[in-house]
Image 1 (spheres, rainbow, N blue to C red):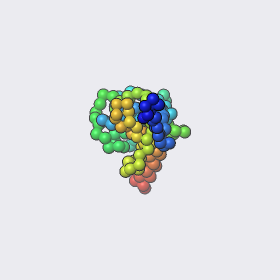
Image 2 (image 1 turned 135 degrees about the vertical axis):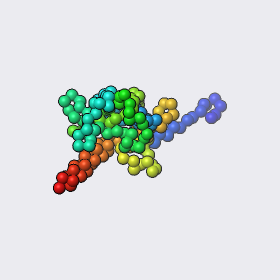
Image 3 (image 1 turned 90 degrees about the vertical axis):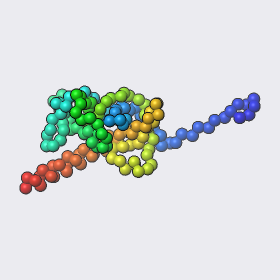
Image 4 (image 1 turned 180 degrees about the horizontal axis):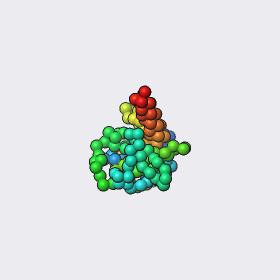
Length: 166
């Protein structure tokens, strides 16, 4: 600062930051952000709407069957699975799609993606982190990785069924 001249501030923003629109969801006590560009649809469903096909949970949406993935199981988050209703966020990339079961939909928000550079980096399905307006840290879901993970699970289950039939 110089008297009569004012104060000069320099703000340096890392180039690794990106801002996207995200759908904030809650799983147990954790908050996750799903990129809006990957969100196709969302539904409030009852547990009775979930069907089992070949040991996979599925949900019927407008004459289409969508595989479901419970984020609470994937990320090992304790949650009440005996609820009156769940929320399913249908996400997709290309011709693949999947339903993610979450406890609550919080809403849309601008999300600043901050890459993780520690032991969380290898977590499947996590693209980075975000700090929400109230200071809460939310992890950002990498939808394409989750879709690949779901496809791998499906292939492994098919192989297991084929070997058990022999």
